[in-house]
Image 1: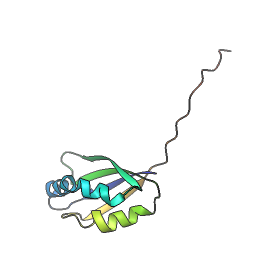
Image 2: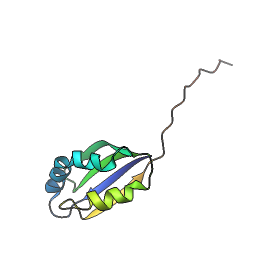
Image 3: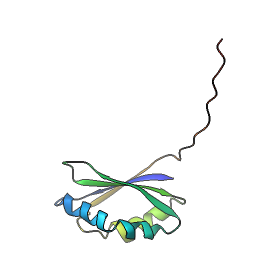
Length: 97
C-alpha cells in the first residue's frame, strides 16, 4: 500500500525538513524489508513536509510513526493519507463500430 505521511511543524518548518533529510537513511532502515521511502517533499511557504512510502503491511505504519517520525524535532502533528494500491492493466483498442 502507498501512503503519504504529512508532518507539520508549528514553529520552525526548516528544522523539521532538515531533520527529515538528515535522518532519511535511518527512516528507510526502520522499515527493514517491509517498506520503502518513495519520495520526500515540502511545499514552499508551508509548515509541513511529506513522506510518500510503500509498505507491504499497513500495520507497520503505526510503529514507524511512533518510534521514528514522532521523535524528530519540531514535529507537532502527523496525518496519514492511505492511497489505493495501484494496478495497471493493458488496454486493448476496441474495434470501430
